[in-house]
Amino acid sequence: MSSIAEVYEKQRNFFYSGKSKDIAFRKENLKKFRSAIIRYESKMKDALRLDLGKSPTESYETEIGIVLSELNYTLRHFEKWAKKKRVHTPLLHFPSKSYIITEPLGNSLIMSPWNYPVQLTLVPLIGAISSGCTAVVKPSRYSGETSLVLKEMIDEIFDEEYIALFLGGRDVNTELLSYKWDYIFFTGSVNVGRIVAEKAAKDLTKTTLELGGKSPVIIDESADLKRTTTRLAFAKFINAGQTCVAPDYFFVHKTKSKEFLSLMVKAIEKAYGVDQIGNDEFGKIINHHHYQRLCSLIEGSPVYYGAMKDEQRNKISATILFPVKEDEPVMQEEIFGPVMAVMEYEDLDDVISFIRNRPHPLALYIFSENRKNIERIHSSLIFGGGCVNDAIMHLVSHTLPFGGVGDSGLGSYHGKRTFMDFSHEKGILDHATWLDITLRSAPFGRKEKIIKTMLH
Image (tube, rainbow, N blue to C red):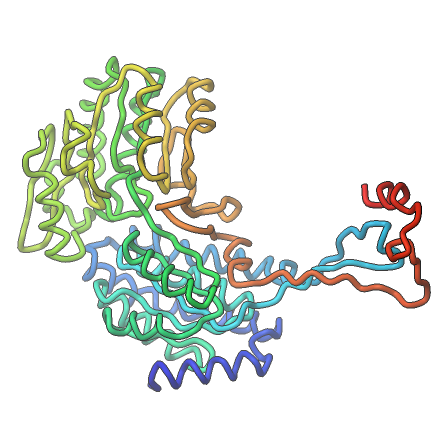
């Protein structure tokens, strides 16, 4: 494969040839992409098992299936999204027409993380292809087996002048960020996101940052605890808790905490058994560094349930810490593992104040049958997105924007928004020459009253 510098130049030349803008070309490559994903499904599942301990079903449900769903949705709609759109023209501009041309931004860079290495690499790539961009893709070195499979697939189906994937670590990331891109789509940690934003700012490059943070859960006194705990057992422990929108810390109303904890244990064991370490459907931590980081968060905290460990396989069982205090280590950083930090509350105002005084979360979940409490939370707090009486499932919808705000991210995607991320809307006023109304031009005289009428 060519060097990064060579691929960068090839892709610039290819984009300006206009070929990637052609609708038929985009459709052909989206279909080719879909066929390849189906063909590589088994290899992806094997790689995800090695990297993250994911079962075949979990790999399909949370990775491959989501990509195929996004691809099918895009194939059905992207031609409509790409069409020139007529919009209203103020009377002052008569005789004119106004329209918007949606065009690709150009040469894009996609940098993806290790926790959902298929989904979070390929969904943005759908946006690049459907919008007419070229793309250089850089997956994480931590999910090395999956990155190898993705490279094999990308190299097989695309020419490097159009789509190319580079493997490697920080040195490759640094080199990629040294180039001037037309658009950067980054998913990863807040710290690295800041570096990407700083590099992009030098060239005023449009950037989408999908980051993370501590996503809170509020369980009030009206919540249906049986359904709540069943849904949380899925949302918290899928991928061993290594999900950017995973429930991180839990505020449970004091009158419900005892029942909640009891039902939570039952829900965990119903889903994953008593021995989660020995359960092949319970994932592993990505590497030993993150395993040790999680162990250090658990140490010294009050363990209510779990905290079983297998250092050889980097596995930690489902763990509930209770009662947690806000100054404990587990409350100082995103957990990103199978550990629940549970606190009690009595007054919802205290919960709102606690969350408000911290960085805006990527997601927030409230479990309640009290509509006033739900509306109060939604109107009082700023966060990326979330669910009512569920968790993480908002990210599966094609019609909902998915993204953060402030420290949890910049911009959103999924469905049409993914296409629009890689696009620019060019506004055009097309003024006819068969008539020229001089109302807008000097000398103005007494034209102001007429102008006001026509503008409003």
